[in-house]
Structures are given as structure tokens and as C-alpha cells.
Length: 333
Image (cartoon, rainbow, N blue to C red; front, top):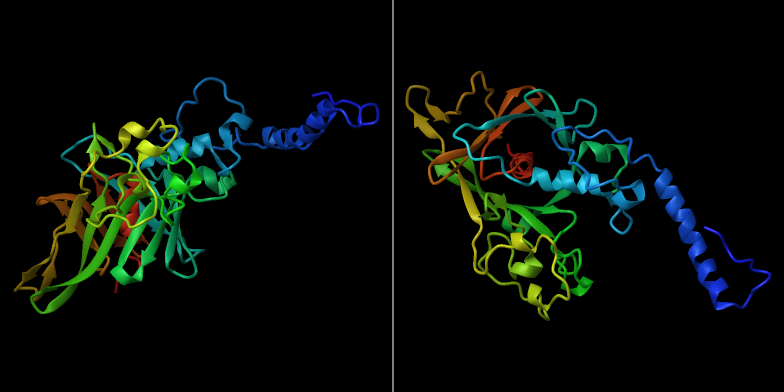
């Protein structure tokens, strides 16, 4: 881009316009030269980019994340096709960082990394490409709410709020696009007290997970109580509708609920037992649990080695919902 000589036309409006653009040109140059295209993303997660997008087109300067990264995050929150069998994954805890956990496929392909913050009240979920500094923010975050003994799993960027004024976004409400709500409690079985989970996830629309934005739905995921906020948060009031607007849950729709399968008392062993499908040689651990929906097993999580756990799940759960639920059990004892 050429620039008008500042000496020849010091007071020209045209000169002032190009002078104002000059810093932006250097910013764009730095972004274009950034090695975004060289980032390696898993072939199973990396989407086909629409057309020939430059690095500058791929990067969201406001949010600090790439189009590739966001597309991967969207895929990870969609459930797999319906099947009678559970899809098998593996969670491995890092031997270097005690609060880091890696989610892998059966073929040991890295899908996601979970890191618990030092305060142990939050867990961040990073994509493999984010590890190479494509994005300064995690794809998903999960925070603990002590008053309800629950974890709230949220996506860092809400597609429904992307084109709305800030005062009408879920960020403004101090929330975010909610992917799962995980409530913990204790249940008494015989003479023992066992962990119990109530998991709430957005309902499915045409076999896709709907987008639960509290600014649009007017309530939190799994809650019957409307949010008490000033002003209208209805999407009807927004000047523009997001391209993802069709994935907004119907008005009055409830979240899907899954619950723990309680163990049974075995008189011969004089203890509680829980049968896991197609898994043998499991280690005894308080973090072993099974989730079911209307009596059907949907997810199971159990320890299979010193630093390794199995994570098996199927529709209607997605990868991030299952992984987040597993990470919510880190402090069980």
C-alpha cells in the first residue's frame, strides 16, 4: 500500500486517512507472516476450508483464535452417529504435569488436552493446534460452583452471540455458551456412600447438539428458573441473526438428563460392584462410574492402569461432554 507524503499534504483529510491506516497495515503484515498454515491438526478433526483463505482471513483478531481451531471445537461438541456400541477413548495423565490429562483415540491419536488450574476450581480444554499458540484461549473451560457442588462446561466463544451487541451476549451475563452441567452428590447404597452424577446436556436437533446460550434461552442448562436480568435477552431483539441460529433449542425445551448407575451389593464379596461393558482388568477406583439414560448405558469411565483411564460413550454425548464429565471427578476419593 502506498502512502501520501506527510510533508506535501500535512493537513489533507486524505493524508490523515492513510496515516491512520498505516499501523493497521503492519498489523496485517505480522498476522499474514504468522505460521498459522503450518499448524498440524489431526486429519479427523481438521475441516476443509471454504475456498482459499489466507492466514489473515483465518484469524479472529478480536477473539484471538483461528477458524481452524473453532471448526475443530464445533466438531468435538457434536455427538457421534447413533450406535448400539460405545466408542472407546483413553485418558492419560501427564507424568510431567500432575494436573494435565490427554484424551486419545484407540489409535493413540491426541484429540484434546485438559489442564486443571492451580486453584483447582477451573479446568481448561485445549486443542492440539492450540498447543502451538494458534489460540491464546482454550476451546472450552469448566468451572466449579461450590454452592451447588456442580461443574459448568462452556465453550469459550458463543456462535449465537458473535453478531450481537455486547449487552445482549452471554458473556455480558457472566456466563457463556453452555455445553454441559454436571451436578455431584452422594447416594447411600447399603452401608456405603457413593458418588452420584446428574449430567445435563443440550437437546438434539436433527441429530446435532443444540446451542445452549443463556442469553437466548433465558435460563441456565438444566435449570427451571429463568434468569433474572435487566433488559431483554431475546434473540428477536438482536439486529442480526447468527448463521447458527437454527441450532437454538425450541422455546421451552428441556435439557437431556443422564444419571449415574448405582453399584449393587455383592454378598459373596461383601462389597459394591459395578459392571462395565466390554472392559476387563479394571482397577478399583472411586472415580469409576457409569452414566445411563432411561436405563441404557451411555458413558463409562474407569481406571485401567496407574495413569490411564478408559472413556467410552455414545450418542447423545459428544467428545467434550464426556471428557468434561470425566474431569469433574478429579477430586473424588
